[in-house]
Length: 308
Length: 279
Ligand SMILES: Cc1ncc(C[n+]2csc(CCOP(=O)(O)OP(=O)(O)O)c2C)c(N)n1
Image (cartoon, rainbow over all chains, first blue to last red; front, side, top):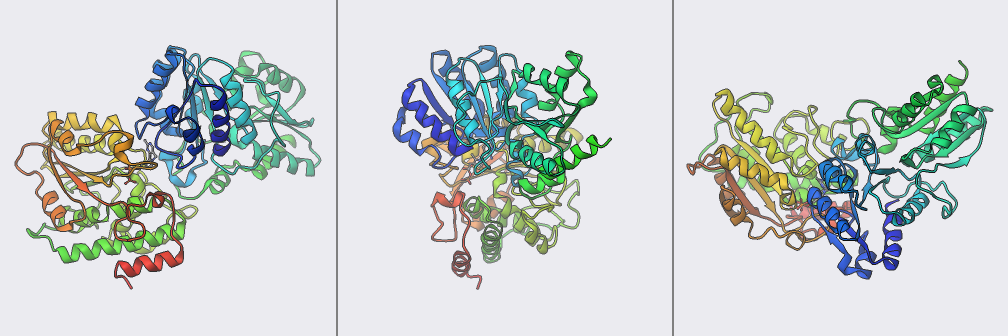
């Protein structure tokens, strides 16, 4: 996803002189093209995320479109006050871009994990929260972001994730979920880098004679309420999938929606990370397996629920 | 508690630092792990601290009277893990489990999991505030003061929290607190002074109220002497600006920031070990 981000931003930067790229001293070589094309609009802000974010707010106040970028916890929780007060309160078009969502950087340990950021960011007034499901959605999200003028948070995985879309997502809209494949036994609502696991789960379920609708719920805020209303009306089982805590994330947002709109909350199954730091070493695949976030584990849980 | 002898055994410290470097190179190779050059940069500081300066007893890692060492630049975890193993906090065999599924040695030091690791670091700019708190706690509790050391990287000095802590420590005259800055002039993606202006770094720490000094950060004997002298009678916290070379000890890694991310091949490990005099 991150290479798609750098590439798409470079293109957008060619067309739009308001785009400014701010990096928190990460992404070695990643922005070489952007820098070469727009040397006056790239700044390595160093290991100083609070300043980077306040700076972005200032740039945006004077008409520019800054993007802040570093590893997820450092571009979100490390500078949350600046995001809240400088960006969201002033309601200026800063885009906060995080790399390494959830357990993407599992091996780096809990300082680099990010299973709470959706919770924090979506509670901020004026903030939109986008969690692209693959590199094509990253590109589409960026184009959509540049076409509006509000604070946005984009939560990306790392590099080399499987592609789910076959090519550019033409009809991408912020706040409008994308149906990847349809089915009738269960509705899998996936946000962010869990999308390939959702697709895998659907495949396994199909093998067991259960067809699943797979939805890339790329925008956690604002929620696509029409999509949710339809899911709760049509399906007996609605599953949320996220590489994020069950406290305050996508599943929580859907649960809030279901409660507020009188849907049958017994239909809802939320899959996410537990209320605990994942301290053991090992990469993302291992962490997902340990926490029950892989496609086959999701399929098993769904089958158990459907056979009740 | 082992009592610090007056004169550091420079020969021994050099040998220890070389062994640490050798191990770190091997770990990076085995795990394909980043931050090799960052780890090599500070092996002399770790050797001086753990084999001369610190009043510690590896068999009693929670002794309340122990000196504390916080690796604030947590991305040099391989250097800390090796140091703690070689110093006897846990078995050297544990180093083979670095980054393995289900292990205790992730790529940054963990909280409450490994003996000798005083604080979980990896997010830069946290070690010094924590160190201030630990140093202040001894005063509040009326305990016999112990010393607190925090090893920072130069890029880490970009963080405002470092300077907030620096002002706090100076105001509180935390003279048992010592910072060592691993000043290797590189950060993750660029030269430090081209990113944010750190220079003149010693003057900055001095202006912030510290007894600041500038030394060759690979002079392990001098490091040991100055760190052991804390508190040094100035009545101030002590900042040692250690001029270092990123990747130190392996000629083809020195001052080449590609090794911030790159891991060595088996041939490169062999060449490095040869240079380090370990074969
Ligand atoms: C708060 C925070 N922001 C960003 C990072 C990502 N990161 C890891 S190491 C590093 C910089 C490395 O340079 P320096 O601090 O000078 O240490 P060196 O490796 O040169 O010793 C960065 C930005 C981090 N670990 N913590």
